[in-house]
Image 1 (cartoon, helix red, strand yellow):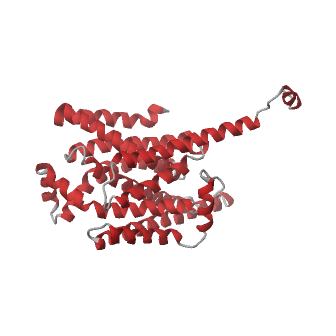
Image 2 (cartoon, rainbow, N blue to C red):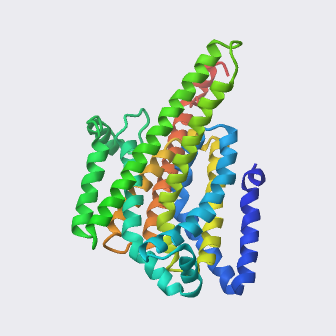
Image 3 (tube, one colour):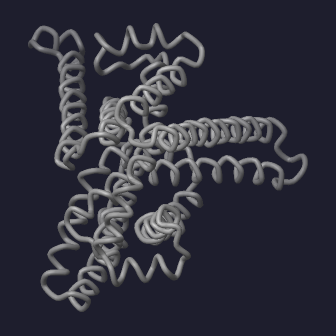
Length: 364
């Protein structure tokens, strides 16, 4: 199970470390290893949330997530995305942006840092909307009941997530942003992206389930082509949702990587290895049914997402160290895991006979 799920991750780790060794020797090897650990620590909550979505996808789309999805994550978000951002902010063409990244790394870093407020606004709004939609939703299982119960009650107010997210964006742009207009535009685009992609994913997922039920009732009539198309649309938009979610998580890691190295090749190798482990971990959680066994993990991951979103918004005006964002996420997930274990044990003890009399009465 471990080798089947993490085999590609182990292979890419070996290839990436060897490439770093040939590229920049022992220094490159060490930098790539540190960046990989940084990416895993910052994005562990991403794996838990991804697993919840991936559980609704077919084996085919799970494979797409691990193949095409990892190519997008490594080469798209960890290599091409920074180049595109630098090109836009510095008003450079693609070739000039690549030349700047390879030959003037300090200027490349400065361009990325100057673009960070817009990046943080987009990613922060996307993640904040995701978090708010979760905590405002009525659900049977609650982790922090003293807090989640009142939040679910006020969440009955229509569009409250958009109201709070928009108000937070306006406050941050007015108080901290050097270019409020750019931050507002980026943040609104992040909200629009979340609403659009999440809405389309739910729309086609519901349509796919409806088609499945119809097909089950009328089996033997007609062909499976329409059913396949409906399920395919659902899988595609869920895949798209996962990619945008991964992108939002990767913003913080890409910018934070410049504190360790300004070399785009080293950054791509290190963050790419970390991204591969996050994807493998996502599939592992799905196949092991971990989210069903440890019921509060999903809650902890969403609270970690909320903490990350707040950190990204604060970082528009003030630097937030990576150990804080990574530590908050890891701490919340660990706390949720421990709570799940305690709840499972208490329920198991509650079902277990506790005396010889009870054992006898139960027929044992």
